[in-house]
Image 1: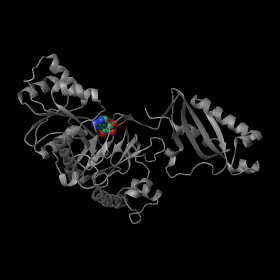
Image 2 (image 1 turned 180 degrees about the vertical axis):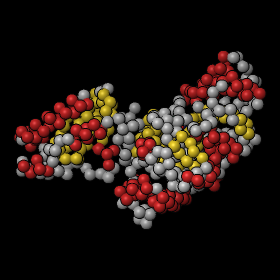
Image 3 (image 1 turned 90 degrees about the vertical axis):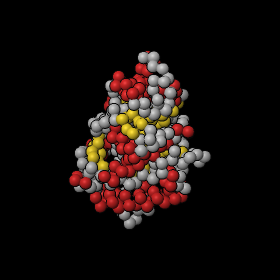
Image 4 (image 1 turned 120 degrees about the horizontal axis):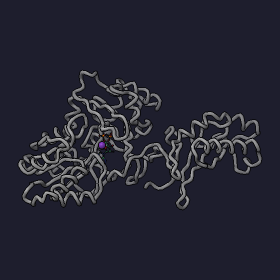
Length: 448
Ligand code: ADP
Ligand code: K
């Protein structure tokens, strides 16, 4: 079932126009209200007047989880605290919890996207849904709850855990739908087999599973064990909560629709931050287009996936593949974990080297290697009567450059424990990009 056909089937040109208008509005709104974004806009040369919309979005740097922590608890809010109807926290899988806020209007949109999601999952008004997502600060429980009510379901707000009670309610109330994490759905399915409950014991038809990565193998197990059609629901607190994207029950395994009239997605290279081609893997990035309490632009989810249009099917919105894992800034080379900033720290303490550097990770056979390209400081180059272009030959002809190369490599080895090849370059030999730190690392190894 399509909950909101006008939006979910909106022709792409119209959808783009809507996104553009909403994004421009969001930029003006943030510029007037949130110091964190005012700073980001002025750094990027963006004003509400010159901002053209989606085409200018990539000028803006990313918003990261650390920005939420730095502005803890309410520093990113765009409305007075009294206008915030509800607070939630992320579950803190990768560190300290982050706080998010919603206006009454935000909560309506939250309910709308969850209603769309549940409808896509197969749920129909009049059905009963057992909600086994945790209620509380976690967005899952209440997020699903209000969306289910909006769709017209009867909600059984049992929350997570208490397997005995879950099974009792499944038998007594006979809901058609269960919402849970995939791992908890596995537990319920195994417990039903273990207790030898026959096919008549429960009445489930649909399972809506999310909040953690899962696989086709888990889908098969849950579908067989609970006798359901199981679909994926994805979301994150910083953007809204569950219901940012959802798989259609008749298109299982082909990706989840992102409700892109509210959440504008990009997929970028995890090292350079540059957009990747449609369908390629990278880090998922979201901009909220309609949120009022805490609008967020270019949020670096850290989730690795791909997005693509599937023009043959029920809706026009873009689809995302399953989450393959989480990226962070850390590089792992031959088993050694390190952050590019460690190299940057070394450079900062070497006056003979300029601030321009680039790290390139490659794989030769099964061996990972890193090269560091650095521009030699101008005063050193002048001293040598060199300037623009340094070649390997030139480096070999000058002892001072040889020593520089050796001492830099030694510092890296001492500090990080890795041998890296160092290539001294002349002024302007490295690309000057706007992407900041992220573009200083090129990972040419394949994503696993
Ligand atoms: P935390 O980041 O602390 O886990 P959230 O509760 O906001 O906090 O969880 C959001 C994250 O959960 C997402 O960024 C993603 O990593 C994961 N997630 C949510 N839904 C799914 C899903 N369907 N598949 C894979 N991962 C998911
Ligand atoms: K989670």
